[in-house]
Image (cartoon, rainbow, N blue to C red; front, side, top):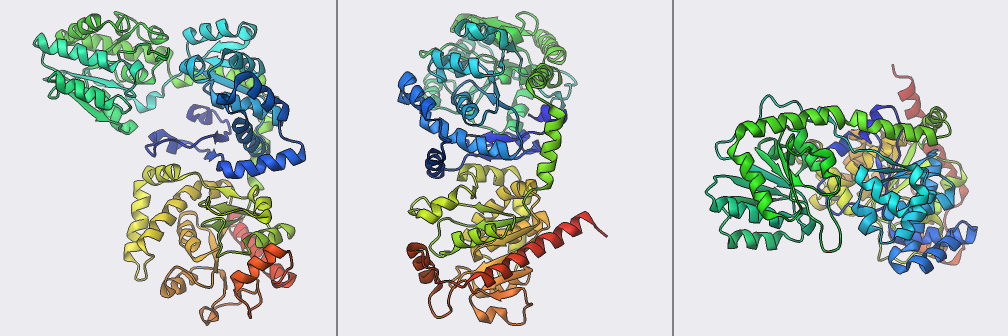
Length: 629
């Protein structure tokens, strides 16, 4: 994706599911395009119901897939996710969707094409279609519907062609490449006083770590001095640890657990030998073209691995490393022994590996055939790029921040958003957290599809960890404030702010309205991060201290306040919140209005006044950006 962006492509990145860990590849932060996640399933089910009413639900395809492939393929869930991304991609002028992995993501793309007509293509790896997808019939259907299939290796291409002979003409081998900007040419090979072997991967059976441990045990018996670092985590960790202890290898073999990408590369570059003892597990899963071998070769490290799947297309036996039969511990031991005995051979294999990467696996070269396939399938890539640019320019100018939704303390929020929509105020409402325990009434269900939901807590935590310097500066700024936000509220809102900044920048947001005092904490951080103007609605019984609110309001261009005392000596843009009769509790009136359909709240005049203020702040801010002094 980074290589495609460097070549000038405008990307829209959609992720059907959030990651399982907040540990993030550092290169993600280099992407210009933000990552959009599907909203929670509760919201998607509302969209499903609306789509059925509107005749947009792919009922026939869902029923056909449930009948043909069984409940395990989760056809309804795939269709719900596809429905969301069909609308999202249509709004953003996307004319082609590319899917990595021929598994549930490709299945989702099949439904997306059925719903929207947007064509798709797939990059297939190996385990995805051999095991994860679970059906060769479904693979044939996906390949038939795809514009093209990019197979990761010649090995993968041959396997897919065997399974999908009718689609063979549009199945192409497209190698994964590596960005050598992150791998400067090593001055010389590493020769540690005690040779270091390193292996990297998930601790699962097909990575072959048990064979590597056995090989290390035999090397120790033969009297070799070495250490072996295993980077990664997974279900076999306890079992491997017990085996290492049983073989008295704890002083030689270290299980380092999961590390950041930068730390992994540092470990590889500090090692003498890279080893990956890949095998086929009991379910038929295996490595196909391990990226970590690319990284080891780019780091000029000799490789010991197995003759499995696409590995021989990468490692040349006897030239850039040594390949042995999968599961052959004796051969693996001999290969490691050969390299441990011969430092010059290690250096020669390492230099040859680096040269092979430079000649055949630079990302700029490997992405070129993929780009040609995109251009062949795209109707007009230049025209598409222009459409995307104009869409961006016309993006929303005002963001409504909603800390939690639904929220019983904001009983008129849905009414407010509807009133702004009627007056053509360009608002993007962002929900920071879905209140899953709340029951959604009819008005909420009608509003749900127009709300944008931040991804789950794992993604938000990843954003926080990805920029520790910015996170630290926000914390230091709070520490220096006389009136501080309570720590629990601050940490929660700070994480929301870091997750929101890219999304708001993408929409050219110039004004942020906080719908509660909690959301105002986040809005003021965004004011600093994005240089936007801020307004707020302060609820009748705010969670935050009065002195903090008074100070926060001084940083706002306007506010709606239930407490008249907060209006003292403020400008005309600070209003008494007239959305309910003053003689009755705001919350009660809002609930009665929503449940009965009888409007007990203030009429159109107040909403008109508020809409004019929002538009004025948005236009003033846009004018200052376009016409700086």
